[in-house]
Amino acid sequence: MKRLLVLAIAACSSQKTTAPQQTSTTPAATPAAAATKAGKVETHHFTSGALGVDKDYVLYLPVGYDEQPTKRWPVFYFLHGLGGNETNWTQNGDLGPTADKLGLEAIIVMPDGDDGFYADSAAPIDYDACMKDGTGLFLPGMQNRAHTCTKTRNYETYIVKDLIAEIDGKYRTIATREGRAIAGMSMGGFGALQLGMRHPDLFAAAASHSGVDALLYAGPYPYVKGQVKLITQDQIKQYGKGSPDVEQIGLWIQMVFGKDIATWKSYDPAVLAEKVEPGKPALYLDCGTEDGFALQNGAQYLHDILTDRIPESLKFLRDHTAKPQ
Image 1: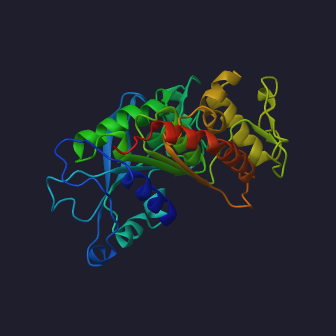
Image 2: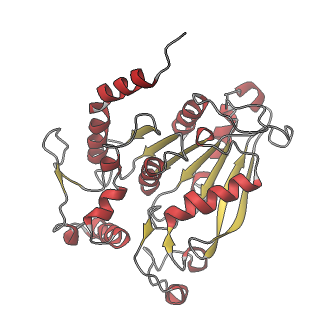
Image 3: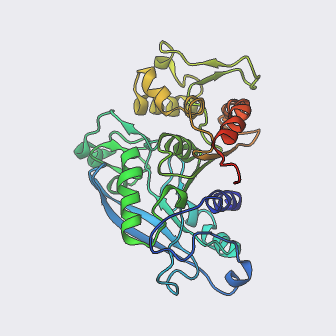
């Protein structure tokens, strides 16, 4: 978590902003000041038109937010994993104290992404049936139905339209791409990468921790550069076959993205990475070598796609960097 915070700070602090009424644009680490004070962690409620229901989000307001009423702050959006909710970063982690120790000068927003992979899905959902017995949820017997059931599954629009508008409308944010970063773990890592690359106008940086970094990756295991196999249209129907746990998740992913490979490609970070403009957004990813779902293989694949583009990126920078007069 500390690594994600530091990376987000670095990405946002390297950008120039033109936000109005701004007195400070650079989120700097000031541990000495943070040692005696603490930011605030709050839970808030708002209506999402994209989901058709009300949703909660957890908010971290940094030290100095109330004392500096004219200052505008960058915002980091942190996305949880499958089966989690908006409280994971604070109740199961130490986000507040970690941000305080770093002297973080940024707002952190932790939304409830349910089990939707932060994508707009055409998969139908019956809200009344969901509220009755959990029909349509990933873990129907374990999830809080009143908290999780939605009327539609438009989780991408929920984040990039509803949530950002909510945060920029209520808090003193730097309301430009240079003032936003997005990160997440597991399902949230996937969400951060694809949302960052699909909406480079909204986010300056995106980071994935143990995320699904290559949705169509089919092997080999372990990863070998130059020998990668990708899922084909015909194989989507068999996606996730294997152990019961893997199959359950595979079938859920198949439900979210449907059976048209074009939809999968439109959300796959490894596909998006082939076309994204260098540095828009800045990207970071990591994954342990003993990941329970072997996600390190897809992470290595995405890593190589990005590093293979370094010469192209350097040329882009040379062509678009103004020469000194």
